[in-house]
Structure formats: C-alpha cells, structure tokens
Image 1 (spheres, rainbow, N blue to C red):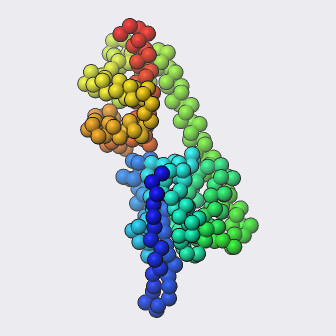
Image 2 (image 1 turned 90 degrees about the vertical axis):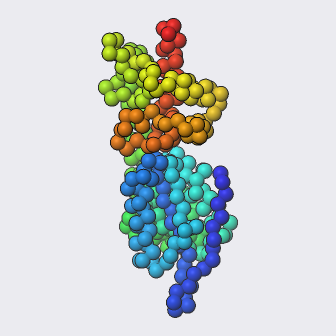
Image 3 (image 1 turned 45 degrees about the horizontal axis):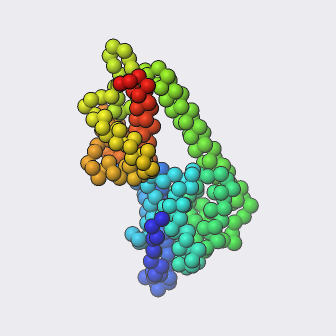
Length: 282
C-alpha cells in the first residue's frame, strides 16, 4: 500500500481562535460511479459540513477510495482509509480533528463486529467522525448506548445489503455460465462483449472483428499468474478498448477495470470459450 502523509497544521478564525482540523473521506466501490452522482453527492455533503462546523477541508485532506469495496475491507487494507488510520494511530492528527464521511457504510460494509471495531479504532485516535447524511457525531468518550445501537443498526443493514447483492450476483452469473457452457447458447442478455451468436446454430462464436487474440492474451496473462489489476493496466497501456465500448452500452466504463467486471468477466468467459473450442476441435 502506498503511504500517504497528511498536513496537520492548525488553522485560525478571524477572532484568533484555533479551528479544528478537518478531513473528508469518500468512497465509491466501482470506478464508473466516480463519473456519476456518487462521488459528487459525497463531495457536496462535505461542503455543507464545512459551513455547519465552520471549518475548511484542505485539498490534501480530501481522501477518496475509488473502485475499492468496503464489504471485503479493501479500502482499509490497501486504500486511503487504511493510510489515514495508520497516520491517526501514529498521533499525526490533534485530538478533535473532524473526519467527514457521508455515512458509516462508506467506512465499512463488513460484518457488524468488524465495522464497529473499525469505527471505535478511528475515534480512539482522537478523530471525530461526522456522518453528513444525518449529522451524527461519533467522539471518544461520548459514545452513548443510543449512539452505539444506532450505529450498529446501520452497520448491520449495510452488511446485509451487500451480502444479498453478492449472493444474487454470484447465483445469477453461475446459472448463466453453466447454461452457456453446457449448451453453447448465449443468454438472452449476452454478458460477452467479444462473442456473438451464430445465426444458424445459435451457438457462441468469437466475433472476428473483436480480435480473438486479445481474449487469448488475457487468458495467457491470467494463466501466467498476473492478477486482474495488472491485466487491466496492461490492456490500458496497450491502447486496447473494452469490448463493451463498441456496444455503447449506457453506464459502461471507457477503460479496462476490475471494479466494473470488464477484465474479470473476460478472463472467465474467455477460458470457458477456449475449453469449448478445444473439446470440439475448433
């Protein structure tokens, strides 16, 4: 994880009184959300927080994790949130420093015990967490039973929502992959941007215009041990456009990314097609 360092210099009001240091943390789980309303909405709420609390969030204190899941804890393990917590635990911020987040689910969507442990770890450093969705304040020494119960209810709902979404997505993909692999017939709404349905047989075949060698290159990189992020970066560096670009599907990203599935799906689907072609002697 790349280490981040934050300025901790105090600011002063016109009356000469020291104003608390202010930070903000925003997160979107998919890179494509950064182009939509998700990131803008969070930033707008931080602007309101500055007005409400009479503070200013310096540009170096505006932390963002893009394309990192809080359900799996990736934002804490390898993102800006993890770097912030390390700096806070090292005493880099004065007590009373405000950390604006839209809601607790921006910090974690993990199991309730993990999400609660993270929140408590943050406020134990002296940071004051303020959720802009309801202006709830979480401060060391002032966590009442009502505050704890309210926060845990939010955490449980956030975790259940993500768990249901993961289950439904996995189930749907598994069923579609199984059907396509068994029959060779594409699903009604094709997930495969680089294959098409043969008009005669209805079977899935490589779209010659989409350069099958790109798909095989993805497979080769995966089999050689490269992870999806590295594969995505390699394709971007090579100037290759995502397969979905030609479909001009609304909401699709214009670059290879793990978060929106353009690489992950291609790896799985390409390997499935390779197995089918090998078994049929194509």
